Amino acid sequence: MSAASPFPERLERALFYALLVLLFWLPIPLGSHRPWAWTLLEIYTFILVGGWLLVNAYSPRLHTLKPYLPLLIIFAAVQGWIALQQTPLPIDWLQRLAPDTAQQLLNASPTATTGTLSLDPAQTHIGLIKGLSYCGILFLLLALVNTPQRLRTLMMVVVLAGTFQAFYGVLLALSGSETTWIMGYRNGRIATGGFVYKNHFGNFLVMCLCLGIGLLVANLSRGKGGNLKDHLKNLLTMLLGGKAVLRIALAMMVIGLVMSHSRMANTAFFASLSIAGALGLLLIRNKNRSLTILLASLMVIDLMIVGSWFGVDKLRDRLENTTLSQETRDEVNQYGLALIEQHPISGTGAGSFYSSFPSVKGPGIQTFYDLAHNDYLQFSIEFGLPATLLLGVAVLWSLFHAFTALRTRRDSLMQGLAFAALMAIVAELIMLTTDFHLQAPATAIYFMMMLAMGWKARYMTAGRTG
Image (tube, rainbow, N blue to C red; front, side, top):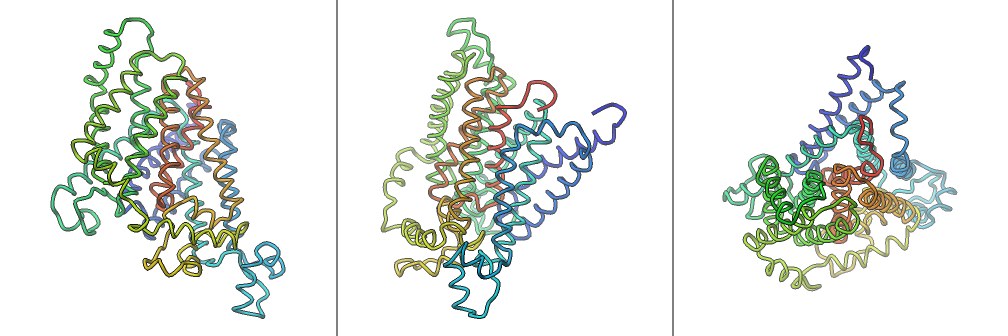
């Protein structure tokens, strides 16, 4: 922006910092997984988007968003579908699009002339507003994080948020307090941070750890000269010098992750670190031995933390001892498939799982499930298969961009960002098989941020604009 218009430039900068405040805030009020919390999120986000449009309505900067349009269009299209789900349609249209839904409506009200694709339009409307706010944050991340300096600031704020949550969660778990200090919920010896559910806490920390490790990779010296002793010296200088605070923050988050006792989050973290590490060693062009030593140190040191605080053997035993007789999540998956068979195209409507699942659950399930413990299943049930596959395209496309950036980019920051995005997406794909992480706003938005970072790693230039 030109020097002749300092106010718009200051306002745009203020919007960026306001976005950072939002990202730090999201996990604090129970992962923003309460109506009052996500209402604040929606209002705050729409104000920020309105501010950006006010500043940039006629700005040539709009063309810099062109590489990211496919990602924005996919998420906008899904929101358009959700809007259609809660819109009253003529009954003959409904019979063509969703015959089972139309039949249920006619059975309840034979004279009905209109109906919705959603079995619970009120909840679908809530899901639509929430989804629009997610899209707004995705747009702001792509539009406002437009310089390397802002990108580094974003990454550091995310690491700070993760470290704060980990420290708070660990301290609270060790305190013996009967209630949490912030929201007054019942407290146990399992770290949950600002969240209520330990697996959401673990998921959040994994996303933050990924960006922190990406920062470490970005800060490695790229010089190719020197022997092993020189590379080891450079690495130790980084870890024990100015970057020591970052490494301590990562260690704190790993301790928080372990003390969450989240089996899948721990498994996904170490699996994704191994996968991304192997790909990084194979694909990064101007790598040196420092990268190999760094990745090895992350695995060894963090595994030592796991062994000390929780125990690798205990983690393995908990995974092995999770049997079908102990949990009914597998039965929920089986019964949930019936809903997909009944509504394969239209879905039951965003947010409708809790009201639609009781119609198909069998006698073996005594627990009330308001959410499926498998986001692949829940999205397929609520959105229908076409919309769910479209979301899958967005995720895999982002993973492809992160992979390509890791292979082709020479800038160290972009390489680190690509490493972080690739690791985060792989980890999330693993974690979504056993829980409902994308139903909590904080974890959903952080995952969407990592998708955006995959595109940023591919297309953002090392110059001023991204």
